[in-house]
Length: 372
Image (cartoon, rainbow, N blue to C red; front, top):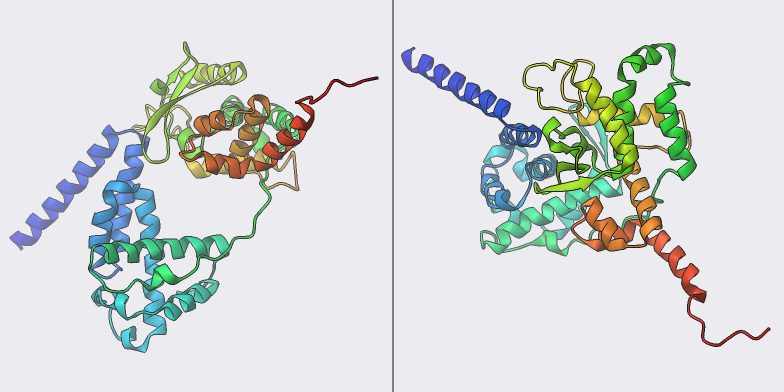
């Protein structure tokens, strides 16, 4: 009984330390801690040998990436258990590492076919091309780790071709739609009566968020992570945490500055819930806004402006990138401002604009004087 009580005491003290640690850190650090705790829970349902993989990739991957790997591997090993009679009677936790050597290319191809539509826990699951490609990419990384470290002899995943994705049109707002959207956020004209009652309380905040997203192209996760002290109004800059964990400064123009100052003046009179004192953007509950809440906010206003385009925070990012490229013609500047590590990622998104600029340049160089 005493040992049991000591165990409970240690568990309570550990959780207390986690809470204290989270309260002392910023949004991104808190998110990393939450992801690490979630990852531990997911790993309880994976084979024990997977622990080596996750320890090995920790220094070079974000916590969110490792969590995505864990989810994908959970689907993979559940498929093996359901499809392979040899492993059907085994607990997934007990799967040996040599299972990776035993699987063939055809097994992985059957797994990709299975991913298109399958039932788990009485729920129907489907994956489109992008989902299947991501899960195969996770499996390739998983296999490659053990193969490179000479823990398995075969690497069938490396022989499976990545599914070809059909190119989708990149959706962005036109300049007139951007103006209409901001006007709609300010007026709340077409909102329902219930929405209008909330709009009175959140109008200044919503204008600041939408103007910031459209005027800087930051990611929604970067937006929710902004603390009060991250904004430098004197030099019109904001410190943000990019994908990959590095910090950088992005700069904002006059329109964004006005919207942020208007909200900042309102924000100073709000007393946040404990643990959310540093957050710049607050919900009605006086807590730091979540990624999901801003996604819903963008969807609410944008559907009043355009029914044909499904607008998300990422589409606002694309809209900004397009506008910046049209104004500057500098693909490297666009890549830098958007935080793309590889300029080819930027080229892929703005290829149409590059072609338009090339077409306009066709008569820029004169070979002979024109005679009229």
